[in-house]
Image (cartoon, rainbow over all chains, first blue to last red):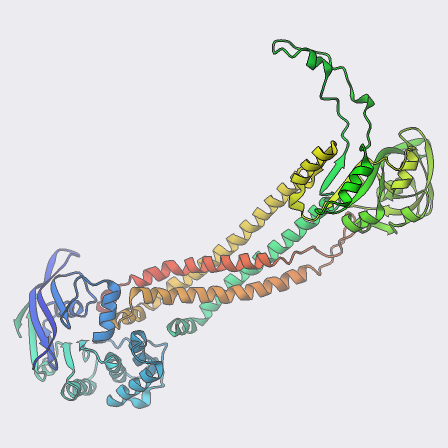
Length: 226
Length: 413
């Protein structure tokens, strides 16, 4: 039983500044539940651009994007924010934690926005997520005071808090040393095997990509292998 | 929202400075308005306290029904003869007793007092000093027009209790070399001479006015003028509500067939002065608040530049533009409200302080400290203004923050 989580049809995007460049050219593919996909390609091939379109943050494109069988195109900014909040977890190259908050608060934040559970429940769930990632003991530390690898794990916990349909990562290991990259990869692997979590990770680390279930390779705005 | 709170904490110093800006603005606004209004009230009070709400009097005018006009009604003719002069008309109010009775039963009237005023000459050796003698109902004057405030030496009630006594304007008394208990000589307009005992000094703060005025009881004045107890030149009416004065004045004029003027018409220039002063103080106060608003605007702008990453991550994790906007508006408003309350409190303390500063001047005998008004309305206005300015100071940066494109920031790294 395969369930389509995300589907894009003929997505095309231009950059207009400084000159008109076609960054994405009729990109189409589907992602089904539980897949661990890596999106690879050379610098400038459009993979990050594609990821931002898929994450609904970039709305300036042609073509159709379906997330959970819903068409994203006609939705308003607030509705898209809702979709991101509920269905997409995000992990960036740079950790992007809020330094003003504790680790726990950082993880709880998207759930507080979603308001599906009470604050106590959210806290309990956040602690559980931190446990899964082995960083339970950092919960009450300030986000500014932990190491890079730890931060990335906190960011993954945050991406998981609302049980998203899909987790997207933009070079989540790009800024980490080998050991921490390995830890992050193992976490992803664990998530997809144990929790049937769908993952879409942009990377240019081929050794990382080769260990995922499926590789989508891009070149000059086109998919050349998927 | 606790995100707003955390951001405030992170920028505590700047937030406090911004709040202090608002505090300062509000403090000065309150202090300025209270002080200005206090002064206004005092200055107006100088005149208005002593002005009846409605004054009923008899104006000496020429007869409006000149017979010659009745003869030549044609449009084409002109006449150059005015025959009937005012010579024969009387200066007292006709049927004064009737009017007084009617006033006593009028529900809108708080009180009234009779007055007999007449020019008089005060004899200083061979020189006569021109002045006015006012015969007054001293009890009512004290009650309604704070007469006792202006009698700086002596007891005002003495003019009623001591026969043939008078209160002189202080500069007038100085000119006449009249001490308390001295006898002065006065010549009425009819040419009769009387000797009166000085029982007090009067000082209103308007020097020219004090130079010419003197006060005696109604009965003394009537006696001096050789008139009976019906002779009254003015009736001063104090109403329950001052706003009614123009209507009631018109009504009295018709009813009693005499002249009546209301306080608003008699003192229009003071109203204007008050208004202009109010406008100036409001303008200064609002300017201070707007300056404080710019302070908040700047700090929020800086905060937004610093917190671009935070905004981007909030947006990426599902906070909409509206959420981001409300966070920054909450920051701005909480700075504003905190600053405002501190300002209201400091402003109150400041006005309290001003109201205890000694303020002694020759011209204003009743004022010992600076006059200050503690009108709660100013506090309300200050509160509203600070909310409005801080809201807008937050609105523009917040709008900018809400329009930040997370992709640009995340990619820009």
